[in-house]
Image (cartoon, rainbow, N blue to C red; front, side, top):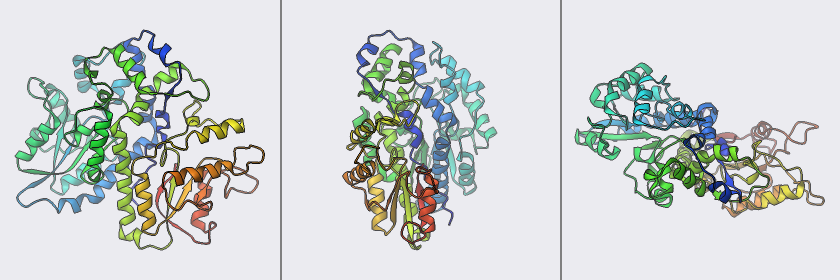
Length: 472
């Protein structure tokens, strides 16, 4: 059975986005910073968006899932209303990341003229899945509206670029940018303009919360609460795409963020990351380069929204008749970064570092017992278990730390951690670490061997149908 949903490991390689500052924080804050320091904070975040398969997978997941639901949602359009899809442009349909990477290692800053020049001369590329989806929607008679904070004087260029890339633009009235004098109009006001024209928005797409609704203005806790209150819309009416490089979530770290100088912004970001000592030192440049990705992962409500959206889509997949009534159904799920936050050993270059000393290795694991669980993960797996799905936990963790007389200590800790977070069906047979079902003469192996064991009946004699695969 082929499942179209690409339930990619939720931003799993955003392991690149994990940073915990050492006690050197105070000395760092005492230094003087330039615009270049602010620009260089995007390096790892931008690399993830420009070069990782996981970033592309998330776009395919979102647009494929929207496409699967499109006709059913279209049928719910109220009588007398015209169905519409409203979408953001930059980093929702067209990648804007190269704009920010063009300033890396320079003292250049974002400016009106630089931004205008970029919009007029960028070599834009359509983001994965977006063109096919909007063309399908257009073929069904759904009006597509594009709303953006772009300046009004680049409207003609924007329309031409959208059409060149294959996006359906029926008229210039369907592209709503800033006002004639480039005065700012909120996206909620723009959406209300569309509603007043007699349209009924059936889906909204964007990389910022403001693309989806009127967000409570405030710091991270308020925005996170807003996401929680509206989580049922994610993956059905609302689709959010990841953007670790920039966004309004930056402003949520400080009440007066807009008025800060580049140096003050850099300091504010440094102060927002966790002041936790890493097991080994890391370079100041690495610490600086990973800041934006870490802030998005740990301080933005957008991360919560993308996680909830993924698990909402996974819930729809397991409820579909073709999956729900099949025999021997199973879900394979990764642990680190998918169910619970990454442990400290993932944060040190080279990424996913292992500790040669068994005591140090085990201490690192034990520190993570109460690491936060990923939003929506527990609810999804408990729902799947209630529907009769078997749950298999795959992990790159080892069976044992290597401590004398403590065989299986890492496995026992992992079982304890899963139980602590309330995940279902936690047993030794359902936890498959890198030591299990490996080829002969191999003590450690890739997850493909554990997946094959599940599907071939080696676990308990049942050949499982894998409904939702959330492994790395």
